[in-house]
Length: 178
Image 1 (cartoon, rainbow, N blue to C red):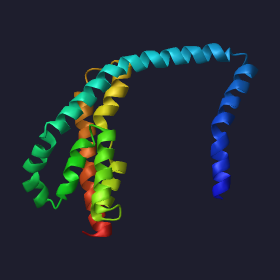
Image 2 (image 1 turned 30 degrees about the vertical axis):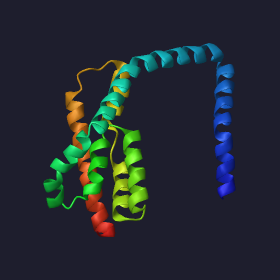
Image 3 (image 1 turned 45 degrees about the vertical axis):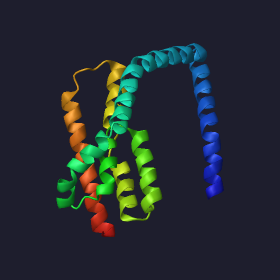
Image 4 (image 1 turned 120 degrees about the horizontal axis):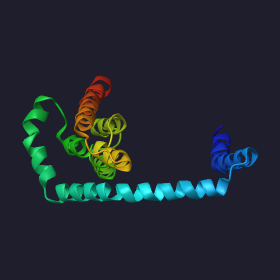
């Protein structure tokens, strides 16, 4: 079964390219000129979203390097203790809406420290699947189409992230215990 899946995945992309070429030739479309037009549009969008991404990455780097992440984690300790929220997971929960790469690095550190089958490892894994890198996603998608008024979207997206984070801990407590 695994060999069949591997074989299918090896031929999926070349088969898709061939299918597009055959379809284009059959319908009389100039496939190469359409490809060039799409590539040009893609580069234009890439240049449009580059400044928000750079700004976001610089802000995240400054946030982590300044010690502000540790300070916020310390400030939230009374609340997280009351909610039985593992303090080791707080930096991950704070960074997840901002950076996929940064939160992945924190998750990897937590896996090394506590193990993937520990409560913390499981909670972080569920959180990764239940939340989004909200600010990165908004910067990319809204930046690509030029939307600047995003305050309502940010509120809703952060509420969804907040819900995903706390339900992840709750589900892990319910299924795996502490």
